[in-house]
Structures are given as structure tokens and as C-alpha cells.
Length: 417
Image 1 (cartoon, helix red, strand yellow):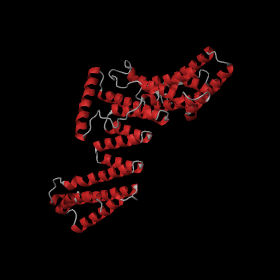
Image 2 (cartoon, one colour):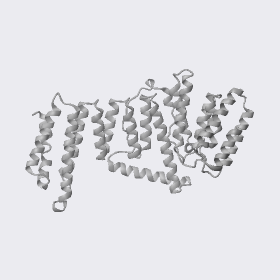
Image 3 (cartoon, helix red, strand yellow):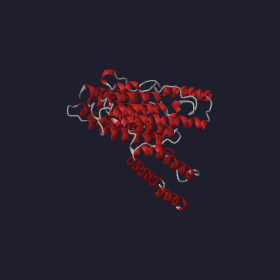
Image 4 (cartoon, one colour):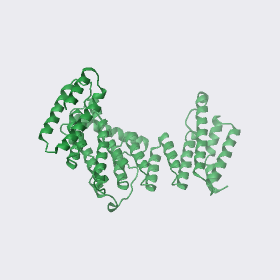
């Protein structure tokens, strides 16, 4: 037996003695556990070991711990229920198995995933931070890991700044990954939506009440962070990056740590202006190496995806953000019929057939379209394409889903157009 295997087994002696003393396992069962552990230790220490051996070892330990917990729940009224070494020794052993496995097979994502999943389940915040830090240092171009870390920071630790920092650092290593940019935008939209929803529910109207609420949240985070053994301002990973090696445009991303006090009317942050600044860098980064017409189609495709993201957050000033994106498309492609229809139908973008003002809103929009036709300097051919696209929008968005008088009105309207 190797020294490492012997050392690992000797460390489990107090735990096994405690299990027998509490009456949770009989001597015969403990001997079986020792034999299985000895076998696993030999397997993982050998030259022919595989990641599956570490996973099997961890699975065995989980089964032992599950059986221990069930027996303890059954006889807890008849024994001393005070926590002892056997309460935490097996989870610590499982984490140690995963640690050794990832050290030996650092490229095995199956091991890393199982390690993270178990650490999260045990709410071992410090271990989770360590795992992410090591994994991202080894695989800085693994987008899934970066996104997982950012999600952990935002949803579990409630650390918006930490999640945002991870997104930015991920983009430095994966500048042209479309998925990362879209997830970054989705994160910012989600955060802003939650912020406004909270203020609405708690009726935080004045800046003073908003500031008190923010300070209360910060104090609560510090307390929970101390209980979990993690600092709110602690980063999951700190990697040294040479600015010459990354896209310099990323260095110009707006700093999002700005005041979010006030209302949507008087604070551009709450209107989504900073999110639109990220959109600008996103489009520029993803299309700067492309040539026309590939650049044209790529830009339009990315803009449509961002518009679809914005559409999902109804508490935000969606019209303002959509107008910004559409105006950007119009400036780039002033004669594109699809882009022009997006601009012409923006007032109808969030109108439904059930709205009381649907008919009047539609009539106003048709007048707006007709006024545009009269003033536009585009060629007749271009105007005809815009008209076809506009009628198609009305039909697909409203006509095909309408009934009764509304349907008759829409049919007359499309014929008139």
C-alpha cells in the first residue's frame, strides 16, 4: 500500500469509530467500508487510473453518507444527537476525492462538473470559489465555465459586480463569442428588470428611500457573506491579462458601477443607455472583420437577436432601447425595407389585439406610414418593397390572429394600402 493511500485511510479512523459508537454501522459493515476504500485508494493511486475511478469513489462515499443520514434520522431520539466527526467527515472526504481527481486529470470536464455540483450542494462557498478559480486558470477559453461562474455569482451570491466582472473578463479571452455577448446583455437586462421590480413592489419612489434600501441590501450581503465564508467583493478568478492581447474595444466598455438612484425619466442608466453602449461594442466587435454584404446580414441578424432579448423584459423602457437599435440600423442601411418597417411599426411593437387603444393606435400608425411615403426621397421601387413588408407585418402580426369586426377592419386596411 502506498503512503498516500495509507494516510487517507488512517484519517478515516476517528470517523469509523464514531459511526460504530453511535450504532449507525456494525463492525462487519465498517470492515466492508474499509475494504472498499482501500480498493478505491489503490485504483486512483495507480498509473492506470481514470477519471471514472474518482467518480466511482465519490459515488460510493455519497451512498455511505446517505445511508448514515437515513439511519441517524431513524434513531436520533435514542442517541446523543450532538454533531460529531462523522457528521462532516464524509462530505470532506468526497471533496478531497474530487480535489485529487481534478489535480490528476485537469482536462476532465466531467470531474470538474461533478466537483462543482457537489460543492454547491454542500454550500461550500470557499470550495466553489477555489474550483472556479483553478478551472478558469486552466481553461480560460471555456465559455461554459465563465457563464456558469457568472450565474453563480449573480443568482447565489447576489454579487452583481462580481458577475459583471466575470462577463468582462470572459470577453477578453473570448472576444468574438456571440453567445457571451448575448448572455452579458441578458444579464444586464435581467438585473435592471429586478431592480425596477423591487422598487415598484416596495414603492421606493424617493432617492432617499432607494439609498436606504441599497445600504440595507449591502449590509445583509456582508452578513450572509461572512456566514458563508466568502467576501462579497471577492472575485472568482483573478487572471493576469495583457491589454495588447485583447480587443482594445473591450477596454472602452462603460463602467456599470454607477448610481442607479432616481427614476427612469431622469436617470439614463435606468432607461437602458448603458446596455445600449454594450450593444454598440458588441456589433462593432462582431462585424469589424467582415466585408459587405456579409457584414450587412451579420449586423442585422445580431440586432434582431438583441431586439428579441429586450422584448422579454416588459418592466423596462423597451421602446427606448428598441428605438436606439432600430435607429442604428437605419443609419447603417437607410434603404433596407426590413429596417424601415421596424422603424415604422415601432409604436405597434408592444400593442396587442386586446388593447382598448388598438384600433386608434393602428390608425395613427397607418397615417404615420402614409406621411413617411409622402416625404421619403427613396425610389418608387424601394417604397414598393417597404409597402409589401409593411402589409406583411400587419397581416402576420394582427390580421391572421383577429376575429369579427377587428378582422374585417384589418382586411379593409390592407386592401386600402
